Length: 120
Image (cartoon, rainbow, N blue to C red; front, side):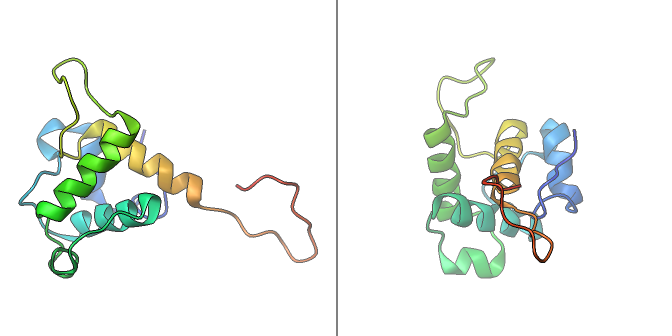
């Protein structure tokens, strides 16, 4: 299943992360895909990432710490080969980030419609 959140759906590099083990995002990576992960971590959990890492779109120590905090909070562990959370954005992590970002999206109601108590 492809990434569906507005933040991630058009980024081919993150789409590859969802389907391909060698495409995992690791410390030392840099680029727009890293920046999108940083944005999601700050938006979803209010995590702090070094402004220099954000500016350079670099997966440095504070981004790694934020990924680890996100994964620990949700207990994202691939039990097939892990005993504890790590700071790598792989299939399970990008899927969780995508779902969390999708859950934060909403569709504005047409003019004159009243909310039914459900956010889409």
